[in-house]
Length: 120
Length: 110
Image (cartoon, rainbow over all chains, first blue to last red; front, top):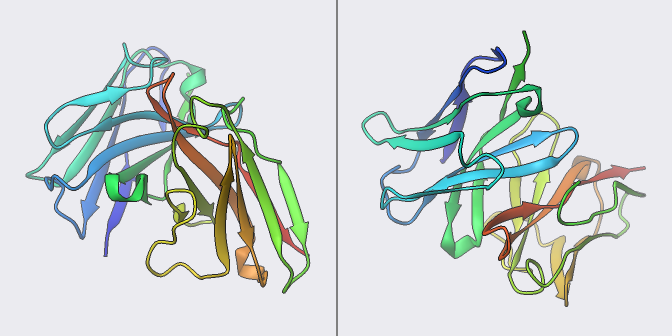
């Protein structure tokens, strides 16, 4: 059974770096059949794709955060990480980790999400 | 503002049928397939429909998807109280070169 579980600080100070981890179980994180995705949900903008990490080691990001974001995978820990620098209140959101699969036209499994508030 | 447009809410009585619409443009729905996700309270979002109208294993046949041009629809028949939640459409966008979502439609079973 595939399970994705996000974790990280619920509060981040403005201008600092938001760091989240997604623990993946029930599937090989290094499989070439999947890619790993971060999505966030804000009250104002709804669901927003942040970026994807592919088994080749490459990543793609949405233009609005591209200069501030890094998604990476630690295969030894079966974890996907998200780092977003220079955060502002606009980055306050529920952050979801998800699995992407070409045969399913994108995301086929999601985590439950974790709320991150950017506030001083 | 979401790139894909969905009605904020729909409601219908138990055992009835409801449809949820999602409209986009030629850079997303018009040129790419759509997925639908169900987000029930306190749970992780769940894939309901992929490639416009296909059901993943384990998803009830009460759910169906259709597409016409730059719009898609999700239909739920035989409504049950456990269907109450928020439904999202999603598609690849060629202009953004990334995934875009609808704003979500909250389904209430009366």
